[in-house]
Image 1 (tube, rainbow, N blue to C red):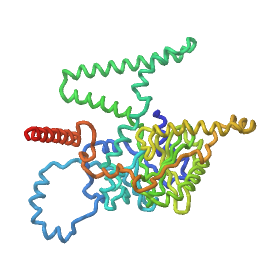
Image 2 (cartoon, one colour):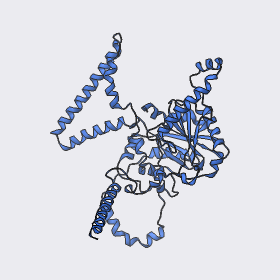
Image 3 (cartoon, rainbow, N blue to C red):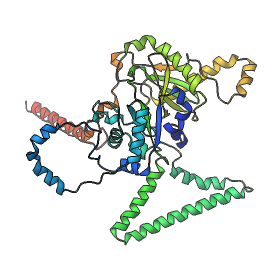
Image 4 (tube, rainbow, N blue to C red):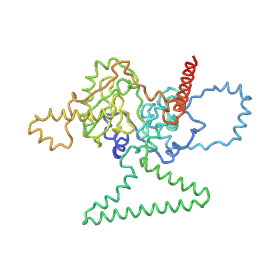
Length: 433
């Protein structure tokens, strides 16, 4: 997976081209100050914030005013954090929400804050004003991917680019003096930058702590800029109460649709067992007519939704691999499916006429595989229900962190020690008997 594949999945990249088959969306560029606000620690909202419901009636407050006077004086003495304000952005968001019917689902370039839907009064990421949008964006952990880790899984990271630069200059032909000179100049500039950075670090060793901190912040800022896109946007999507059983994820490999999967794998929907073949035909037709050959990447996934009247709506594009979940598939299975189905397709198409082969030579995109080759997976029984990641949203991190050295890992190690100790004690008792 390359950086271009990740950038192609940004909503501002694909939505203008697929607007007619997607959910209605308005895209607003985000100022750098707002991005810094999202990355800052803590959650600070204006005093007049409408993001949370008012839970105390005015009459009750007046009746107990004396009880709170002492607390109020203590609060006044405490230093209040500076709450940033974005009036222009707030006005633009409120205007867009009004145009979209009064309720929206917010998202950044790739992700939406579904992990903090429990914060809202409805228990969903549905927002009706700008301050609700800001609250969910500020509180969400899933948006950290967009802000800091969008290119973590890419093979063409800045570090790899630096490693490949000398070999590119060395492989250039002798006659290409301009390219070689550019490579040498770029390498020289890079060495100068590294030297200046090293000098700054050496100078900071004997400088004041404040100057040293400034140098460290500069290096951290450069690192963050290399691991995130050049611009961020806020996409406001018109809110619909989507039926989860009609959401599907589709997997494309080498411009071929190879797999379709039920999007909501935490539930069993009996009617899908009887109708999934018809749904597969409908999704394959949608891919062939609306997506095939129009998306720039050759490997990707896309999510769709089938409405009550049978229309297929494009919801989102995602990368093939990386942070994208394969759901009822595994990435290894998808690779095996592609290899097997590709061989099967080539064997079945070997009887094609010469004229159709000539037509294919003049066509930039390969023909779509027939729907019978595409594999579709659904939850076929209650025993096939999977545990969803959303079950961990809103719960303490220690309850679902299984990494080495986590609280859960330490608890399991203690239990193992206690169990082994109990077994040793019981064996000693048996020996005594």
